[in-house]
Amino acid sequence: MEGMTSHTVSAPSSSSVLSRLWSALAAETRKARSFPAIPRTLVFGVVALLAAVVFAVTQASQFVAAGRADALGGLTTADVVILLLHYGQIIPILLGAWIVGQDIPVGPRQSAFLATARRGRLITVKLLTTAVVTLIAGVVCTVAALTPLAVADGSLGGDAISLKPYGWLIGYWVVIAVITAALTAATRSITFTVVPILVWTIGVSDLLAAQVPELSNSLDQVFKSAYLQDGALPSVSALVWAAAQLVVAVVLGVVLYVRRDVR
Image (tube, helix red, strand yellow):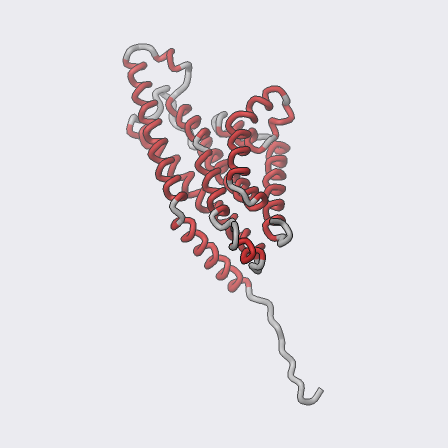
């Protein structure tokens, strides 16, 4: 019609979308770095792992020098590092909880949070930030834990150190951190997320899996079977089950985080 103008609304280009995503990811990473508990967790983790590995290497050297290598029970110091990093999963669990939990609103902030637009994009960026930060933390902690072995010319068992188990272990750190972040978003409680996950992954899971074989397909057991068995590739079905558990946790976290009627 005469006198009317038409406006064409163009969809954002892929480059602009990626640019905004990168900017949001960078902003969340800076926020995570400035949150005191996060860098402190990483520093404490590195120091604790270094101290534990140095102690293990020193003790193993003394046993070998005294002709008591059998007292090590067949374990090499490389095995000990894997076990220490396994129990060090408290680091990624805390990182995942804090990256999301630092923005969990309480009191008067809750109303402002419920009115926040685009929470879907916000939680997506937070989950990506969790993966990136935990990947860096996993690499740093693994390098720190392996450094004493490199200084001691490898494991005292005489075999070269295989890096495959550490790849699986770092992957597990990233996955368990993302799951923790997603469940923290779902429950909006750090305590009610971290405590059950730690109880399950560090104790209950092993006890139940020994009695109920079907639980060997739980996500933590699938990864553990890989990094505790020299990087052995789990079965396809086990990997599919593990991926399904990750997807369910992420979807649950995103849906409940976005909903404004869930407090």
